[in-house]
Image (cartoon, rainbow, N blue to C red; front, side, top):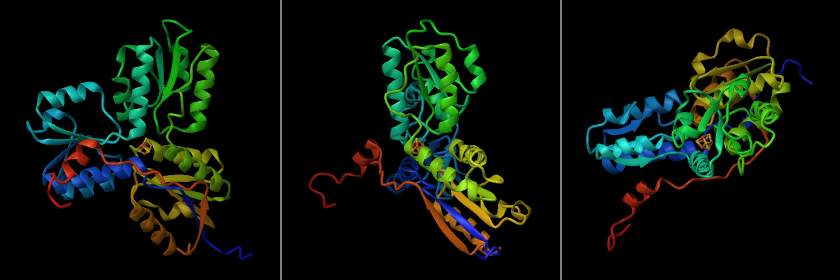
Length: 323
Ligand code: SF4
C-alpha cells in the first residue's frame, strides 16, 4: 500500500434531500410564474449559498408576514409554520405557497392527533429552532420541548399514562434514543410516534458518516451553522471516531492547518447543501493532493416530493390551452 496516498472518502447519501429540493424548486417556479419580488418567510432552507443565490434572483427573505405587502405572494419555508402564521397571512390577504416538507407536516399531523386524544406531548428538539416553533404551535398548551437530556427531569405531565414523545426531523438518531430512554424511565407508559419522526434523509446522512468516520483523520461537513442536520453530522462524525470534524459553508473556509498530516479526509454535506458546494470542496482538496476519491455508500435514495399543491394548480394549463 502506498502510505503516501492522500484520499477523500465521499459520503453517499449527502447533500440535498427531497424536502429541500422541493422547497428550492418551489421558490424558483414561483419566480417564473409571478416574477420578482417573491417573499419568503424565514430562510427557505438553512443554507447561506441558497439564500444568497435566491436573493440575487429577486427573492426577499422576511422574518414575519407583517413585512410582506398586502396581497403579495409569500412562501413558507421547508421547516413549517404554526397555524397562527397561516392566520396572519390570511389577514393580510397574502397569496401563500406552503413549502413545508411533507415529513415535517407528518409530525404536525401527529401533534394534532395526539393533542385531540388528550395526550401530553414531549417534543424532543432544539428550543427556538423554526421547525420546533412551528410544530409546537399546533398545540402549545399540550407540548413541552425537551431540548437536552437534563430537561427530562423538569418535565411535568397531567397524566403519566397519556404521554407521547415526538421529535424534530433533523436530530441525532442516537442522542434522541438516549433522551427517550430517560423519558421512559420517568414515564414507563410513554408512547412512541407511529413511525420515525427523524426523517430518512437525516438518518441516511448520519449512517454514511458513521460508516466512514473510523477511517478518517478529518471529516469536512459542508453546511451552514444554523442547519440542524449539518451540525448533527459533525457531531456524529466525532462520536463515530473521526480524528476531527469541521463544518464549513464554503470550500474557502477550510483551514490548511485542519489537515495537518491527514492522509484520509471524509467529505459530506447537510441536507440543505447543493452539490456545487461539495464539488468546490473536492476541488479544494484535489489542489492539496487529495486526488483519489472513494465513495462510501450506505443507502440509495430515490424519494421525490411533488411541488406544493397551490403551485401545481397555478402551473396547470387552463382548459383548452396547450401545455
Ligand atoms: S431534512 Fe428531512 S424533514 Fe428536513 S426537508 Fe429534508 S427530508 Fe424534509
